[in-house]
Length: 136
Image (cartoon, rainbow, N blue to C red; front, side, top):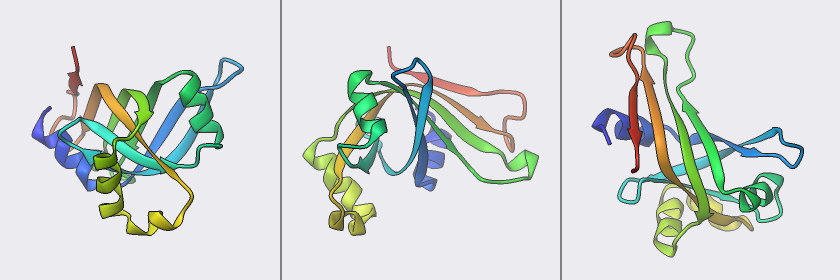
């Protein structure tokens, strides 16, 4: 994975998770995350009973969006991701709690989204070009 992509993912902390809804539509949720660079996974916390987690268990093919919030066109950056949803490993949970120690107070479980495909946009350096990454 290109270092610019890794740097961007590390620089952010909030993702939008999209899952297929029971009616064939899409359901979204926002989650704080940490990037497990070794496993190429985004680690996040949520409660087991939530709609997005229940839907992700039914169909673990999920989509994720991470963007930089800006109104300046040449500063627009973001990633669109296709991933596979799973429970996080113990080590990934520890990684999450290192970044968000307050999360230990919640009744949340820790989950992972293993990146399968990614498209990176950075208007500052790539105005007309996008970088793509995928696992074969």
